[in-house]
Amino acid sequence: MADVEALTEPSRKNGCTLPPHITQVIAWVVLVVFGVLHFTTLVPALHNSWQPAAHAVPGVVIFVHLIVHVATLTIDPCDDKVLQAKLPKVKFNRAKHSFVIEDGHCNVCQVDVGYYKDSKIRHCRECNKCVKNFDHHCPWLNTCIGGKNYRWYIATLATALVALVLVTGIAVMEFITYFTDKNDRNILQPYRDLDATLHYKDADFQILYQRVLMRRGLPC
Ligand SMILES: [Zn+2]
Ligand SMILES: [Zn+2]
Image 1 (spheres, protein in one colour):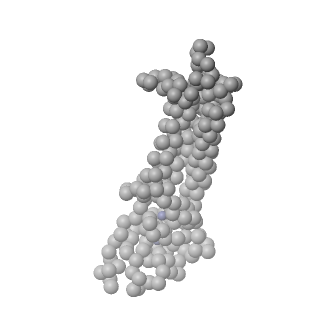
Image 2 (tube, rainbow, N blue to C red):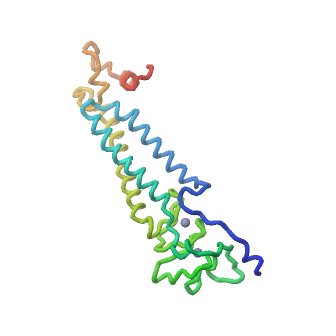
Image 3 (cartoon, protein in one colour):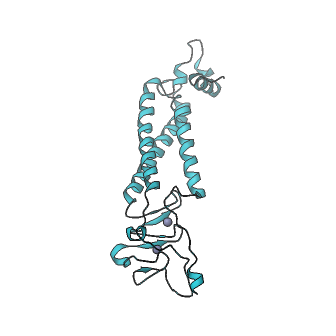
């Protein structure tokens, strides 16, 4: 039995520890796609007077999101007593113990971590470590959310939500105004750029798309 318990098992340090979770990869892909889509396609299609705000506001929100996102990823939420422990983590021995934490002692971290009602401590199976004030293990960030990184996590959620609402809102607005702004030409810049010789009815999607490409310096 002693041989079984002697088998050590590594723990994840934080959200940057390899390998990444598939949902963590999806989160970063969505973040990059939204950012590229916004700054290279949605903003150039807006009227010139709208573009500074359309660059600045989502830009600041996305920048702040990146900071708090990386902060949440890099903070190790592990309990201090476990961090200071000298003994290695061992594989849980179900034949010997009913629970990972028994009587305030973690049988994997090999540390007296205290009782749940006092510290809300839990041993995370994915991270293989005890986390104080444990909230949940977030697959999108691939790290535990606990007392040490909870505020950063909330800031990550809040800024992601604001950025999502801004970018999606602008995309929906452009989609609607594509059909409704042809006469006023107050919102979509490509329509405003149309030559006087062009009649409104010629302002179809092809022209709109070509104007966006021209503004981005791309061949069309
Ligand atoms: Zn533990
Ligand atoms: Zn975890």
